[in-house]
Length: 347
Image (cartoon, rainbow, N blue to C red; front, side):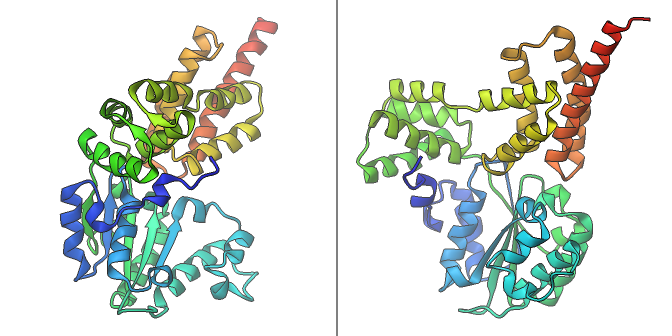
């Protein structure tokens, strides 16, 4: 998709957020900036809401809004962190610094710099559930030191992963999944602006199929419009039939089954980082594809489901989603190899 994404081109203002309760809650923070925990399921508009709030509160949003995707940030190498144009000013001449110290310095220095406009700046930590507890302890001290000039906003699907001292310093902003009617209310003006012919049935079909995931609904509408030059029930149905990552997910299972865990890990990383899956969603999809499209025998499929129960607990309590999913596939592949070995050399 070479055209600009509609999710970016039609990013909402604060007054355009589809959830009225979210608008009301954020309106209260415009004149009294405070630390926030913006919490809710995947794709419901958490990041869009934070950006809309920043546009409302900062005269120079580009200068006074710092966004850090935690999962990406902590997964980077030292060189990648050092060469990021947002952070290189803090790390010049510090190539021998340990990665842990680099991350702490970036967080501390980002908070300490004076705002360009107004009286405060905003640091957004996206996917905040991925922040290790020791970094959270350090971050708590940074929040205390710079509370007058820096607003911290945590977006997360799992607020319970944040330590109590951070939670106590933040105003909670729950973001619920938008209703079908609210999603249609977002899609209609986009279609009008793009001069795309549409009917209500087509928009309702897309909104219903999204299951509350606003981002998915907008991208599905764009894909449908590009493929059919219109959005109707039929064109939306055909588009949704073509969408999905089943073949990609099947390739993960196939690679693991043949012992190519390196390639499986790379594909998992792509789905988690670029396609917006969270660990539990991807685990569910792996199991569904294994049942419906994988050419696996019953014993292999049952063993994968058994291992998935342990992985699901790890995903809930752990921080590194990719690690737990790769561990699952590795255990599955090892078990298959042991089974084949026993079949070849029975006692």
